[in-house]
Amino acid sequence: MDPVVIPILVAALVVVFLVASTVRIVPQARRYNIERFGRYRRTLQPGLNLVVPVADRINTKLDVREQVYSSDPRPVITEDNLVVNIDTVLYYQITDPRAAAYEVADYLQAIDQLTVTTLRNVIGSMDLEETLTSREEINSRLRAVLDDATGKWGIRVNRVEIKAIDPPHTIKEAMEKQMRAERDKRAAILHAEGERQAKILTAEGTKQKDILEAQGTQQAMILRADGEAKAVELVFQAVHRNNADPKILAYKYLETLPHLARSDNNTFWVIPGELTEAVRTVTRAFGDDQSEAGPVRPVPSGKEATAGVDDTSDDIRTPPLEAGSTVSLDAAAAADEAEKQAAAAVSDAKAEAEAARSPQVPRRGRTSGD
Image (cartoon, rainbow, N blue to C red; front, side):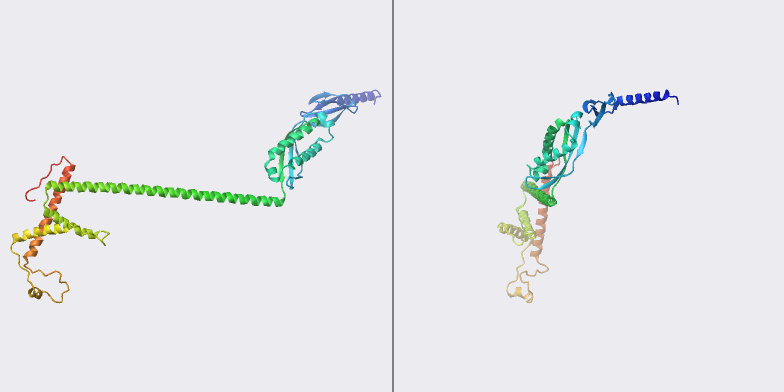
């Protein structure tokens, strides 16, 4: 090899080394701290940067993106002397690379120890129940203390969250029993409220039903009474307009009496005082018919009457009628005639009522044969 070529190659290698040592490329979201002869010189920003070879060197490379740090569970004593294990998660970001590298030796360890100390101070002033229900307050107080302390380290604490609060096993069992009892209590209260509401609604429905049934019965009775009153009034007017015979009225009066015994309340019924007058009227009517038919055959008296009756007969209240008895035939004929006249009077009354309701239909008068 030519002796001249070797120095040229050595010089070229030195130039390449110097150029490589001079140029520094920094990635995005990274910061490089440069020291010159052991002293902080500057912080390289992302992109192409030139440094002095041999004199300048990179001390620390830092990531300025927001980072997450999760601590291990740490025992903390509450105000009511209960030990709970609490682990936290921390969100932080490096804002000053120089301070993060030169103000604190290990910023992660420093943040962890500061978090534990602050957490014990905060939890020590709360009891267990307040600790479990005041996470937002604990997070706010932790963030305020950590942000104030880490500001001089070039670190900003964006958020602090309590990941878990783990009380002792016995406390967990007691809390579970308490929650179970509370749920049972709420369930019993809700069940009682439901039954109470159901009974109230049922009572209101029954009350409304009884009221409506009573009102319906009242209206039905009123309408039925109005109908009966109008019917009686129409029959009364028809009877008076047709001038019904008192004998027929007396016979219908007597004919109505047996219907009293057929009613549901047939254990007791009252015979009106006008019965004797009705019987007297019918008797006079039958007497007039008998006088027109002929003399009445005298009824045998004494032994003659007794001789014709069987001594072994138990029914002695109804005397036997002979085959040619004129009295019995005339009475039956008079009764039939009275019934026919009553039926005719009722038919005329109905016709009068229909004529009163329908004025277009001509009124039918009574004939002499009626």
